[in-house]
Image (cartoon, rainbow, N blue to C red):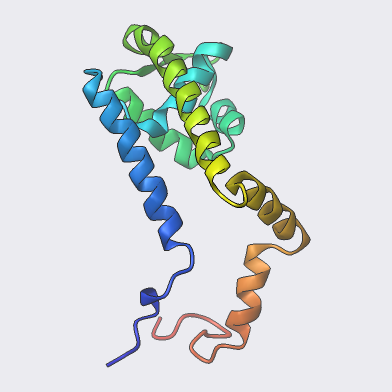
Length: 169
């Protein structure tokens, strides 16, 4: 039997906590009678409302996500009627626009964002060290040496990691 490396994870708990917090926000939407809204949509909806229509590339840059990830998210938001796309000045460009359904929710979404940020601040006040400080320190450490380079160095020493090509391909 092979040892399962997934049994050990330093950051799994962080992902689980974030998932639980998002589920709690989603529960608030359900309690308020909001259908189809996911917590992960809120930043984009608020950003589009504040700044107006944007291309997917502009929106992705605005919220610091990849074009591919943002395109998928826009598709999901379109599927539940929160955004639509409209043609731009030339045939190649499309702009993402909030729908009337989303506009009706903007005040509530802004209130939830403010309440969530206040709850995060409250949580950080209960900790011996704020997570936002840890994240900032982590970003600085990754600027000194990327996560890629840190992993690649270890893989270069691991006999299970091929030095050329994938085995059996």
